[in-house]
Image (cartoon, rainbow, N blue to C red; front, side):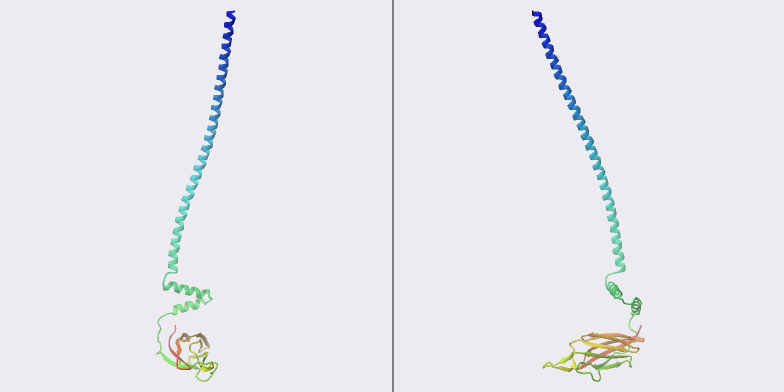
Amino acid sequence: MSYNLHDRYRRRSNERMMAFIVVLTILFLSFGFGFWIGGQTAEQQNRSLKANFDNLKLEKDKLQTMATELRAEAQTARARYEQLQSTYAEILPEGPMQELVLILKQQLDEGRDPSRLSFLIRSARPPRNCSEPETKRFIVSTPAYQGQHSEITIADGALVIKGTGASAVNASGNPEAWYDPSKKVTIEFTGQGGIKEVKEGIMPITHSLVVENREYRVSISEGARSFAKVSFDSCDYP
């Protein structure tokens, strides 16, 4: 009887031990599997982080290369800009030369003959063999007066000058025979060979006209009532 009881306790002890071993084995296996799963996950994360790091490093290298290229292009552009500035300063310098170039460009844009402009520029020189200044006068024609002495001839007939203007008005508002010097006048210059030029404005009016091989320089200003005063000389041309 005591032998059976002892044997029964031993079997139960063995069963408890086996159960403990089974539980311990299950816990160990569970821990090991969890550790393996964690290791796999961590390894995958490490691979992903390394791939991201490699991509970021590649992008950084690309950006650095682009920045270097942009700096080089900026330096090249700056050098070209400075060269263009230098070339522009040589072609269109400051001061009177710049103004002359702009005037010449404007003349060409307006359709002036380049050969004529070139001739005029080459012809610019101090006056030579000039005559003594002279003064004459003529009556300015008006709508109320178209009579005699309304033109003059200078330089032995080389140039004829005449002019027309607006009539002066008296206190009653009626037009007078003489012109009003405060208003525009029209001056007509006629040279030998059919040369004819017209200039309009408020006096004094200055004008130059080339007839044959002489340049006539004329200044027209207000004279005595009805008259315009003409001062002129002439020089060799060109």
